Length: 307
Image (tube, rainbow, N blue to C red; front, top):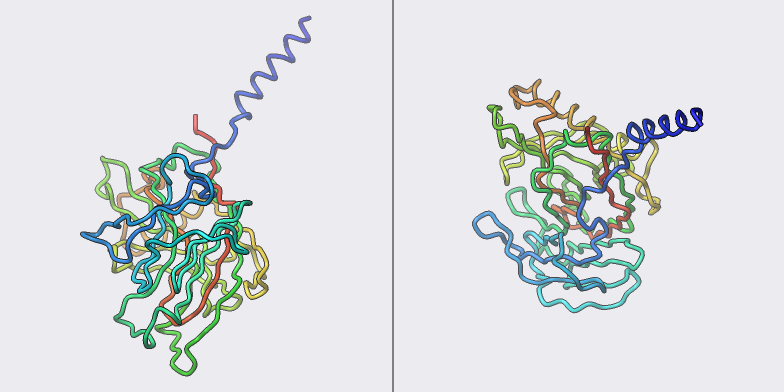
């Protein structure tokens, strides 16, 4: 009897110490409840909701927004159709679709967007999804990891001799926006964009081979992206049109970004535990005349609650 009691006690101790199951932080990770469409132009720095697209399930408010920044062909009023990609909404140049298995498809035909080769001072076309994560403290979670799979079905350069890689590109991007949430810090509410994946047509295999960091002029916020192999592993070539799995250690990525920024004289009064999530986005930015199709699935941001 005493032996059974000891075993039970050890089981309880093990469960208290090791049964802390990771919890999902992203709202509606597969976008099953749909998306709110935003107008191509923001007003007073804020997106303007103009439509709602459902993917077969109507219930509750969608947690995600569909952004079509700087696009000429507004998706507003698009009617859903059943296609090879599932439930699809489309304009002349844009497609947003969700299959029953949760695969998301985002397509942008920039050849229908640009009337001439884009110059460096002109805005560029986007199609991306975004969601709010209202000041979720990273320090509340251990083993915090973002995972997803993506593939590039199409990335066709339609520019010919007008192509200038210093100005024109097709990029599939994913970012967290993080903000210092410590009121005692001189950097309180100072934010950064933390890259969590990057496809760039100009790089071998579409994989960013080096750290990319700069000031985003539109939001006046600093960006930090690790090399793509940190997330996808070595030897990936997105030209194969196959699925590639990404694994992002969020704490490790933030620590590396913060060390880099501090070396540049930025975020001097910030520590990693000061930061909180505010939002996430993922999709295409296409500053060149490219026709592009991206698919993504199995989004998940999980961590164990800290004790």
